[in-house]
Structures are given as C-alpha cells and as structure tokens.
Length: 199
Image 1 (cartoon, rainbow, N blue to C red):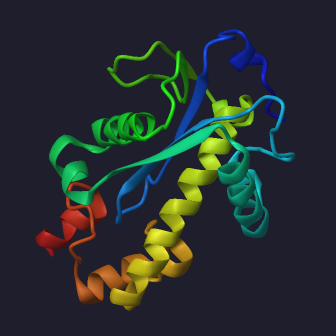
Image 2 (tube, one colour):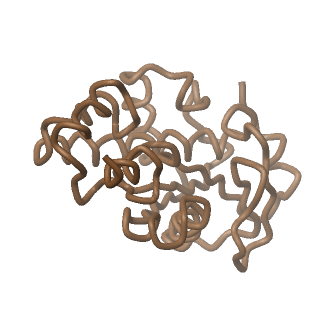
C-alpha cells in the first residue's frame, strides 16, 4: 500500500502528488490531477485507482476533496493531443493541474518515469500511484474526473459505448468506429482512428 515515505523526504516543503488518466484511449481528453494531502488528516484506503472498485473510488474522491490541503485538475484536449502528441499533452495536463493548486508546492512527485519541464522541483516515481499516498490520491481524482467526462460525452455520441469503455478501444468501440466513423472527440493521431481514412 502507498505511504508517506517519498513525501517525507521533501518535508517541510509542501509536496504535491500528480497523476493522469486517459493516455491510452482512442477518444477524449487526457486529464491530470495534483493533490497536496494533509499528513495528519489523510483518507484511509488510498491506492492506485486501478486497484479500487468504482464505488470505493467515488467515495474516496469526495474524501480527498474535502480533506486535502488543496487539489487541482488539468486537461489537455483532443486537439492538443493530436497537435503535440499524447506524451507532451500529458505533460501539459500535469502542468495545468499543479498550476491549479491553491497553494504553491516545494516539490512535486509525478507518477511515471519522467517529469514535465516546469518550474517546480520534482521526482518521477515509477508505479508511484502504488507507492505514494499523494500520487494515489491524484490518480483517483484524475480517473473520476475523466470517467465523468466520457459518460457525459456518451450521451452525445451513443454508439461507441463510452459510458463503459471510457474511450478505450473495446470491440464495441472499434466496431462503432468502422460503422459510424470518427467523432470530434476521437484522436486522429491514434492508429485505429487514423486507419479509418485508409478504408
């Protein structure tokens, strides 16, 4: 389970955890969250969002937002993903999430193997959402926010199953792409979408 070991290395500076959701889907934005937790008031059960049930994630999202010192979200659009590629769009979303924090931080812990080029001191932590409580909290906020966006988008574009697959390339999604074509929310730089123009 994640703990505060990484955060305490940078104490007493405020330490933010950052994670993203939505690098792999064929449709929708990439969303990042940044969270500065209170070490004396941390919700129980924080973990990598992928290890939690939907009900548990939803409950923890509310607790994180209520009890964290501050939190912020950052979004990079489909147009930005197609323009600068998914890696740099992810870095942009992460930067926007940290910029959205109500308090400036002295250090940022980033899930993954690289950090954005930004003004904050930062450390990349591979599998950080399973190691650092702040990153675990960020992973929950990012996933919940993005999932809501895709469920809402599914009402406008009902053929693709986004309410369940969240934009990932499920068989239903791929079949609907072939039958109905791409929507404005599809990432045209991603191969399964780009290949439609070759059919």
